[in-house]
View 1 (cartoon, helix red, strand yellow):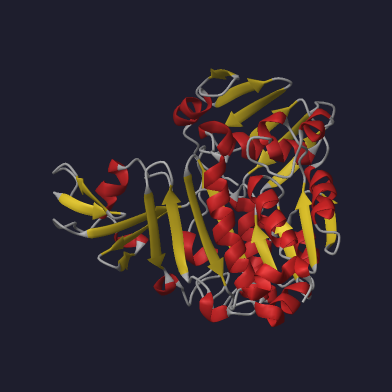
View 2 (cartoon, chains in turn red, yellow):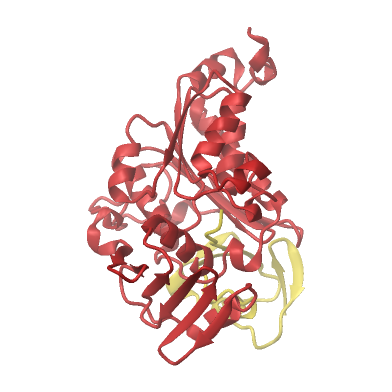
Length: 339
Length: 67
């Protein structure tokens, strides 16, 4: 027994045999923010064979309070998160193969990334990408572990294709609202709690102890001292277009994707939701008023300036991000302020 | 009416009669919420007509996106 994993091998449900299984597995981590760095550190220390970490963003000072792999130096130099994460993780465990990709993930990328993967860990910050992960998970029968947190609240669910309901069964509609970590804040312990739920489920999947999976939708509010676990098995729908018998993987089709376009010569990116929505600009103004930005509003649109960018949000859901030609950066700003 | 919500006994005003009222009462109406009433999940389409009774055990889980 190598000393390195001795304590994990002494843990009966894993054992020497389980450790070998962990060693032969490949984890795909979408996102390297708070949940991504937490999940990645646990799984890399646990000795997973390979981990692929994908992120489109770079390290900023406001990340350091909870994104555990990053340093002040990373923030000063605006190092891409995937790069900084790999650097730190490789120092933690040089045995693990770490693939880091600085890229924006949409359908095509996800389809490619999912090859030869044993589990997908959700460390994203929006439902557009989660619905794509969900459909890919069903298409290739790869388990994935939803996790999210905001404020002192967190939630997680493990989706096993063919067994549990999928995210589309649970949600029915894709949530749309303005509450994000950048508008109402987030505390580190809420991140760590979700990370604990996600990584424990990931380890169970990696050692193939499927009976031990939690099987319940879990949520908590650490500040309010609340904890809830619901059995959602009955929510699985035979008619679900993502996991039912007549499935079409709706979120892999072009028409259901959020579309982006660089507006020529305007230093602007337009982001358009898959279908027109009727956005309540007054409630959005309220949410954004807590931020260090300047808001102006007319009946048709809301303009939110946060130097050096300006977001113009239309009632029909379209958003113009001024001050960038970079689609990935524009998407980051979009999801940061609009969820 | 007294309900047990996520494990805590909570008094809700008389105006809260249905699951949908309860979701609004907690300011969750713009969110996707899964509601369990006495260990049975209330389907989203039935939130408006499902009545609450004194002493009901309610679990409320809402989806968030941050991470």
